[in-house]
Length: 213
Image (cartoon, rainbow, N blue to C red; front, side, top):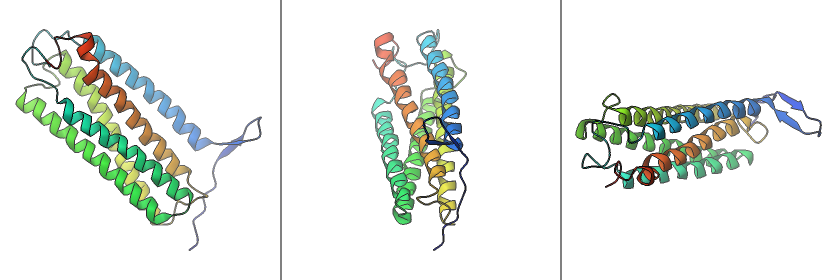
């Protein structure tokens, strides 16, 4: 079967190796996104413990569901492994395994979003924690919500990659678009590790009376 060819936009460096401008673009984009999440995590930590009225974790208000979120974190990190396997498969022109691992990544990402939706529902309906109730609610939903939006974009991106793959669009000679999607996905997964740590694990150390009684 004849593969569709795509000419990469590259530039040659002084060392003699070439740099694909598409990959350079995604790295610059991810660097700016990194600054965004640093600011959001900083805002969460600064406002942690400043809520004058409940509900907030601790002091008998409610407890964040650490086991559920830890499991969801494991699922998201596992999706990074499946994304690695998908990229490895396309670099070997193994279209079948590429689509299988890509679909696995998509399913894991969708599962993560579903669990996050369940957590939001329980917090809002059962615990009364909404984005406007206090500082904790505002910073919690903004931080985790923006990350969730990034996961959703990643899932849609991977679905697009999957659909285009049936047109024989990607192969070992044209794997850069898949690599770009993989870089974005790994970034989203890595960011969640820090969010999980600073939202669910670190607060008991900084403010023992605010979380996980």
